[in-house]
Amino acid sequence: MVPALVPSFHNADKPTHRRVMVVGLLFCLAFIVISFLLRPQPENGHVLVKADRLVRTAGEPHKAN
Image (cartoon, rainbow, N blue to C red):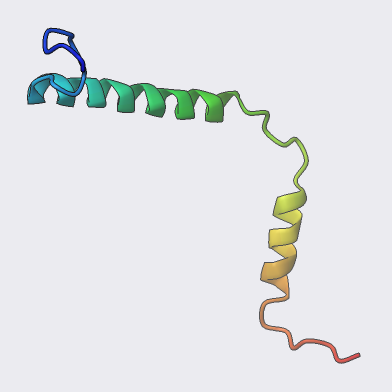
């Protein structure tokens, strides 16, 4: 049996609980933003070439085999 005098996150008051949750959410968002900004960006335009090809051939009928 756990004594009642042991502090725990589960018996904290609502404002404290809410503050801890908001701080945790802010740390998660900061981690996501920083990891996204530090990610190496692709140097080639392969995706742009593929998108351009899709746009240019959008109205053309497909060729039969």
